[in-house]
Length: 409
Image 1 (cartoon, rainbow, N blue to C red):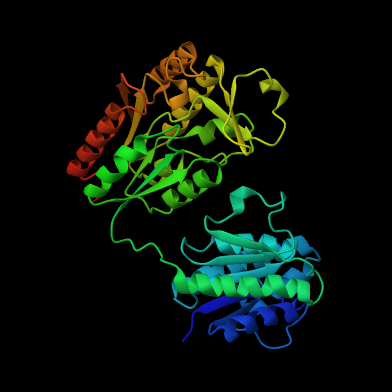
Image 2 (cartoon, one colour):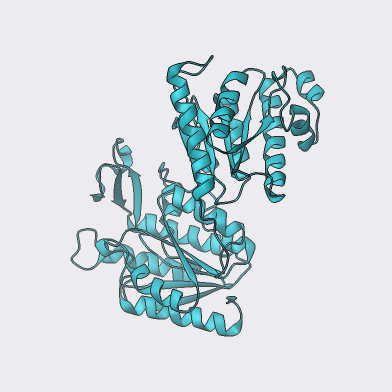
């Protein structure tokens, strides 16, 4: 049997398009399974899971959705049911990948459905609003794929069939090729930026692997932090090394490069052993091609590339960030160590470097000392975060946690 692809959409209004997708999947040797999430009409042929199955999975009925006379309520109900049903079906091994087709309503539902499935399940959304700013980053599954449904709002044509057939082939190919997380080795989740600014992962990764662990390093630029928090919350990591929590500051100061308000909380909520440090704590990242907020116009800045510009926090802003970090860590239910390298938190803030501000760094360190909660072990280092001494201290703590059974090997 070929790989099984779950094709989801409103079959009362997009029957031709959905059947076209299913036809491409079957022609390529795959198996197309169908789920109808419409409310008012019926498909031209019976689907594998009907709209009544979806409504039932939401604890409701199609009659209730119709009686509400509110399309937003009805589609949210169907989104709840589609997500729950897809999650159950995948848990039962019923399909290998999913493709959801929709306009704005169908995309709203697609985001919930894809978020309900684990990492490694191919997730494709064909949407008239793909890549639109109306889609909040926080609702995107870590490995979701999208393609614009160009020219396909109503009816089949050669333009939209190009998108539909690509998506059908892409999800089937992904289902054939995907190497899903195996779980054979425990995983350490780590946050960082590129080696030009943060370098600890270069020393830590081979040492952690030598100890029998996998290492997954997340780029802490909004979506990376969201994925990191999501997988941490799912219990996928034996330990987290959250050494670049800068997204906390980004969110606090209103940057669009945000991982949301729950950044730096998943490990504490789940009791996952966590080590935290100050990688790029002193910077606020903004979208480089947008105008800088007026209040930061006279602030020292570093244009990393055309996509990203970092501004330097004042001493007062760094004290704010220190308090926020400590307040979040105070809620942790598992072992937590905060490493405070007193000589700085990124390559650009070393003495003599363009973004160096020793007074503001000292203010941040003072605030961390004053606010560090009792449940957090504070380890101060007379070193920079990129110095070998930092990695050595981290490995010493990690080995202690292995020996004591805190980190499961």
